[in-house]
Structure formats: structure tokens, C-alpha cells
Length: 412
Image (cartoon, rainbow, N blue to C red; front, side, top):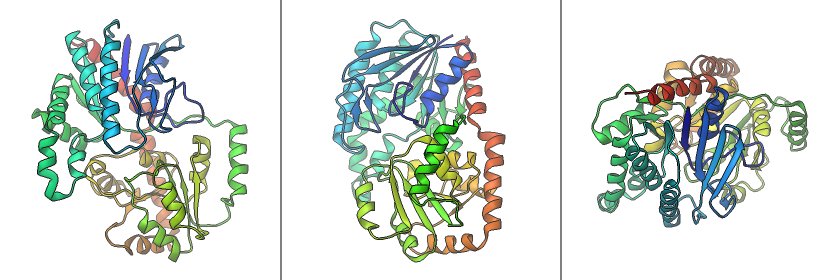
């Protein structure tokens, strides 16, 4: 079976470093392991490093069963702004040109967003009568509206009508919709006014656990030891991710100033410089910058708790992001400010803790109790690991997705 995967803004097999595989890599690897042929479409522009991989259209035969096609676009410096929207239009136009000379696949799995490029490839597949799933992981363009002050949201909604029309048309063309949670799937279906069908599915944004080689682990151990991040009885709370405006670190910094705990923040992004400035001289708040997956695994192992200080926004309320699955896989409880889908999971399985970001002291109050109640913390960590193994392991999720794609390819 020949499968197309379209997914931008994620690491690829050709990228250097021990990067965390996401949807594109995990699904393509699962398909290849079962003997299927994969064409992975992505952007030449690397969303994380904000650099171009080759600065041109590129076709790479990475292995016998994996072909990677890179679509050129102009790129952007910030995740938020007009330059990113222009980049996505450019990406869509270039994708349209590339599709003219392609033999069709048997089935496709199309990541959404970006809006325009998804619409282009969905339209091409529909014209060729190729079955496909749309994988909806971000509530575009709805989140654009909610970024405006309340008084301007009606005007913004009118301005973005073309994007809403494209989004709905794209969703309607798909044989089924894939989403990371039931809440997200419900939102997607409500936008096109239809009930859930046979091909609609929940596809968690989870991870496939991989073996860590001893030499890489030893280097990571030495590195963390030199930074003073050791197994020495310190109550440690860690964060691993891109430091962008989805997060509110103000309550975290306040807690660091008042509590005898250590915060270790790993990652880079637009918030990094401000965080560094705001925590200057704060010895129990450590900024590591970008780290690789081996270093991240060891940081989790040396921490008591993982923090996900999201702003409690609409799109994240629908979602359960990879941060939560990463923590579950490591047997670590999470503390977060999010309500919605993840809060429901916390209530049902007791795998984490929620604080109120609008109450400055709330995070500090909860952490004070957790530091004193290690048994509760340990129980939550065990619950998290057990839940991950039982329901959320990447091997299970992607094996089921491959099976569903095979069924879709054979549909009448």
C-alpha cells in the first residue's frame, strides 16, 4: 500500500540531532515497519529552528520505503503574525505546482493546519478519488478570533470568513476526521454539521518509546551533573518544550521565589530572553535552553513533577498535548493550569494536579501540599505510567491508525 502523509511544522527523519518524533515520523515509521510505502510531504522551512532545510523544492529517497518531499516557502520569524500566514499561502501555491506531476497514492493522512495547503492537497486527492483522513490538531481559524479582544472578535470573525469557508470545505471532503481527543473531534464535526462516522477516530498525540543507548545516556548524565541537576533529594519540577506565548510563567516564577523547590526549564523560543531576565539571580530557577530527547528523558527521571503552565485557552482546553503523554510515559505526574480535556483525565485517573492561573498564590499553595505529601505524588506517578501503558502507548495508537488506513484504502 502506498500512503501519503502531509504534515508541516514537525521534525523529519532527515533532521539532525536527537529530536522528539511527532505525528509524521511516528506514523511513517509504523507504516514502513508493516511493509507499506510512504511519501512524506512537509515544508522545506523548519518551524522549530526557523531556518530552511534546503531553500528549494527537494525530493529525498530516505530509504527503500520512505520518500520525503519538501515544499518550498518563504518562511517566517515569529509563530504569530502576518508573515506566517503569507508563508502558508506560498506553501500552498508551491504544493499545488508539485502535485501536478505526482502519481496518486492508495490512501492519505493529511495534517491540519496549515489551512490553505491542507485545502490544496485535499482538493487534489478528492479529484483523484483517493480516500483520506484529515488530522485536526489545532483549532484554526477559531483561535485567531479568540486572540483578539472581545470587543473586536465580531469584526475579526468577518475578516476571517474565507479561512472558515476553506476549513469547512476541507473537512467535508475528507472521508474521516482524526483528532487527539473526543472534545477536538466534536469541535471538528460541529463545524461541518455532521455526526461521527465509521472513519472518524481519536489519534492521541503520544510518543513511541525508543531505546536509549548507554553512551548517549552517560553523556547526558555528566552534563546534568555539571549543571547541579543531580539525584540529591532536591524537590525538582521540570518543563520541556518550546517557550512560546501559549504559556504563563508568572505564577511559576513567584513560586520559585517563595518555595524550597527547584524549577528546571528546558527549551528555547520567544519567551526565553524574558524568562532569563525575570529570573536573574534566582538560583532555584534553571534555564537549560534547547535539549535533545536523551537529555529530556534523564531530566524527567531526576524530577518529582512536570509542569505545563499553559494559558487556559480554547484550543488547549480541547487538546491533550504531547507534554502530558511524555510525562505519563516516564511515570511522572503533571501540574497544569489547563481545564477541559486534560482536567477530565486528571479527575478520572488521578494522574496530575490543576492550579488556577488567575489566582497568583494557588500554584504555590498546591506545591506546598505536594512537597509534604510524597505518597500522593508517587501514587499519581504510578497511575500515570499505568494509564499510558494500558491506553496511550505510541505503539498501540499508531498500530491502530495503520489498520484504519488500510481499511480506508479498501473502502467501497
